[in-house]
Image: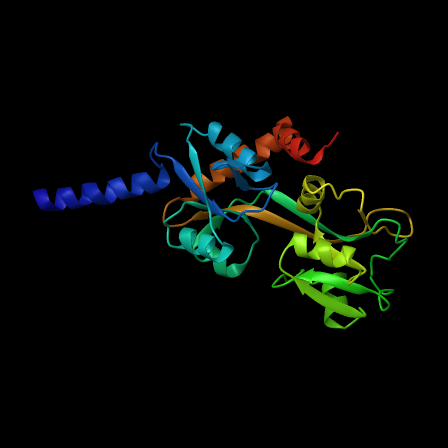
Length: 261
């Protein structure tokens, strides 16, 4: 009988720790992707970092978050196996839902545009049907959703398609005249251009009505390991993030990284 009671105690303790995690720190895994998330002098910084820190300041009890940066594939494995608690800036897919719990409130909405040399005077329609004369740079391994851009790429609607491995390489190929434009996430690209004093060299392609041509919107999320956290805990985090959006905190953090003098 004592042994049975002891086993029941251990099972109960395990359940309690999963539903109500203890006061230890939480570990969050991702890749280096400034200004969303990056390490500067070993200090984690960035838009997503600040949002996550604020979330866990509002939990009861509050929790410290330790951030770890890996190549993306390893970051996924770290959370899938429960070695880290959260994968963040993660797109949704069915495979990840087998081992993780998504916070169903967008962490970052990534918007992709086409960047060209300033003064190129290129104007494109949102259906990308008038692109046959242009060469485009795309990132190697990126899927680009299922909309007009993906269809144009699949149907060979561009004169030439060049693949690159970084924003830096995309910019260099553009300035060297090897491409007419490249597709990239707006916020990180503008961040890189300002850091490199190249912001006056490039511009975003516009539609005929003079609006920036957004070719893809890609929401990303917080993803908790099922091994470490319950539905109840994740639902509480989701409620906190939604409250941050309602009270203006989320917008204030966003503006800090997207408003420039």
